[in-house]
Length: 316
Image 1 (tube, rainbow, N blue to C red):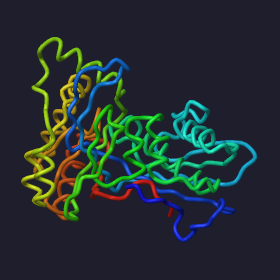
Image 2 (cartoon, rainbow, N blue to C red):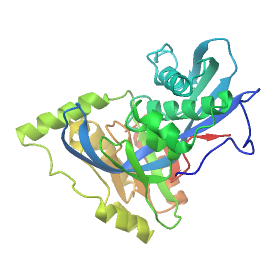
Image 3 (cartoon, rainbow, N blue to C red):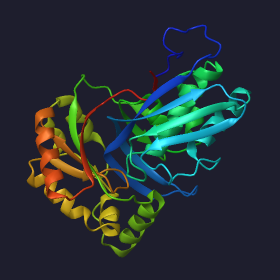
């Protein structure tokens, strides 16, 4: 993750004349251990990120100003001004590289809003990669990840993708070294989203009241399970400290988790701050069967099959 990066086949490129398309995945947390609140207002995290095959796509073109348009999930709901993470990422890169933040950006979203899948962070990562190629700023992946850390805790991971350990507030990312294995997931998407800050506040409240479950602790068991390449072993190690908070805020998620397990999933957890739930399957065919049963039970808006790990933000 320290190699210098340039757009494919363009080592000496000084900026793209045509459009640059970048595809970026969603993420799930296989392990999300939430520690105490820090002085900076964030919680100390010990997490294992995993990039899965649900994608947003960002296209960057030359322009005289910086503009953003979008289609798909969240169209008409997300502000397209400088408060949007896409716009903030473009301004951050331009400021770092000393270039004018001029681009016409278009976002095609498939990752749900406020779903615990880091859709906004994914779009920020895609913007950094796309504008780096468009403007010819020639930054390494690690330089882009450094800019990403100021935009959000999940953004550096989505520059890299794969499976990685996240520490600090989640922004300090190191790859998990394991033999190549594809894991298959069913992603149960709920109606509406949940606020990540609200989920952390709810977890703090539950802990103060003594009604939260015990903290997860170290990631050792999960990292060992990833090396064994056995989905049944991995299933026993999945965990999320924010799940109690998500269930308190959206009690119906308990029915989604029960339905997934009744459909034969090896394990099911809330993804990140929710309300998306993810279920581990034995293989792709097993995942398709689980998704079909979840769809029939109507406990979620949509059930999608995905696999991981996949690469982070990449120029198509």
